Image (cartoon, rainbow, N blue to C red; front, side):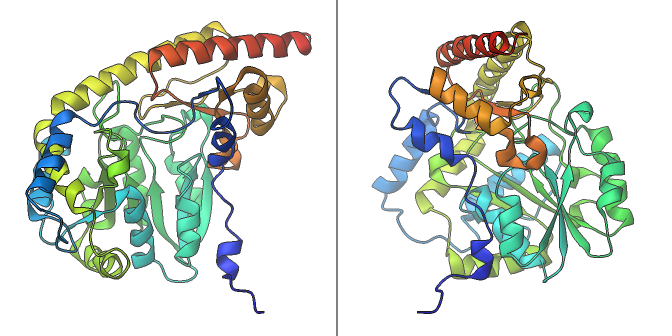
Length: 391
């Protein structure tokens, strides 16, 4: 028989995040600090609105681009929060999570050979989605000494005459790094100079702890060359509702919509009605969750400093990225031993790119009680390692 599989798909590796959690699911008393999923319930008023929509029999398809009511509220939200002004009729598309938006944006914009700049460490989907869209991924390795921010010098060095898209993964998963306005202005200058487009993944925009998030699309001359991607999973604890959105120039949105029509039809109707309530009336719920994450963030920083693990301070998302380079082990080796010896699951930094070697991603989207127990176990493991290595 001929090979039933695409040569391209066989080159793509499975997600490095899942390996440890398949083991954890069958390990008694194990604690997982690896999944990027809020531990809060979706706000009750959102769930109540979903129930009401079902009771009213709203189980039909929506328009391909999404409910008008939801798009209007998203436009209002982006205006009041980030000084962004989009036409809900022509510059917006409701998607099945932010992940679908990433996928169809790249498919709509890339021709074979077009290069996509991907700062890493970053979300695991960017590189495979680029490959599946016939693009060529070009990795930019971010550095801890720069707080894992993208610098204009790093960007300039990666650009060729084939470069078309820069992915901006900030606030960042897995590092928690953010880009402030001054940082973004320097990047925007390079983008405009070389006539590039930006895919800005802002799914963690509501989870910044010192300063409010700034979207690169809000800078002069950048809206017309940016695809902004966001959603409800992280900010409103709505991961399973699978709802995101993309905002972009009409020419790009129309082609993304074409792919969406044929592949998806429309995002889940119940989720869309619930999201109208979320974006209109849940600012206080979002603020409460952000405050809780901030408390956990500060607790983890304190504990890692007490155990002597080097760790830069994350200012966004709900991840922390401690260095374990002092032990001379790979991230995978460290995480495997930690799981076997102390029953704590974390994600090796290499799951997010080769430059994540020597780091671990730890999620603080968990209760303080679980975090305390896990950190106590990590303290024991680190102390035993140092004793074993004569430190």
